[in-house]
Amino acid sequence: DGTGGTLLGNATLAQGVPHGIKIAEEAGVEYLYHGNNAAKVHKTYTNGTYVWSTDMTAAWSKNHTHWPFKPTDVLVPPGEDAVFVADGYGLSKVHEFDVESGKFTGQVFGGRAEFDCDHGISYDDRVGKIVVSDRANHRLRWIEDDGTVVKTLNLTASIPLPCNAQTSTGTKLGGGFLIVPGLGIDHADPGPWLNGSV
Image (spheres, rainbow, N blue to C red):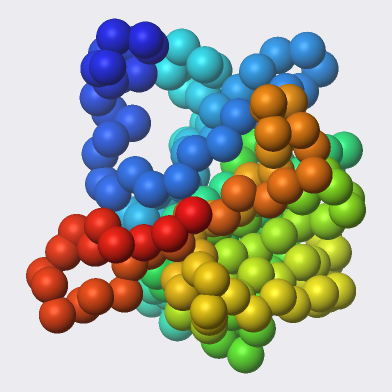
């Protein structure tokens, strides 16, 4: 809220393990989508008031098809009625939820064959595709909204462990860049690993 504190004092959004957050405009209203490692996804107004909250613990904890579910990032692609949730610390899948209700739509793709810690999911407006930060595989993968992989870029030499990606549209850099922060890889130190790159 500009004060360096919690979102307008809403500490309940920090319950569990908050990890990824995105803003999306829908019919002229801005909303925040929150991914939480505690099997939760929230949709709120920008003042922190809940629109809906989805906790998949009861539904999935006894079914290992989707469990453990530990969201690391979220995305509402332009023109979609769905929020895509990257399960980077769980089974490395991408799950789709309805933007209006928060209900799981049944669409899921990815998994260890496609991603190993799909840590970040963003929209690359330079090419009109979703970009997934496939962190443990040291690469970025551009996908369609059904999970079809259209491009892979290996980043081992430049950005060893990509955490996320964001286009530079609307910044002084201009719209031609993809900004990719990387986690440091000096795991001899107990962390935090501050020797990462951008």
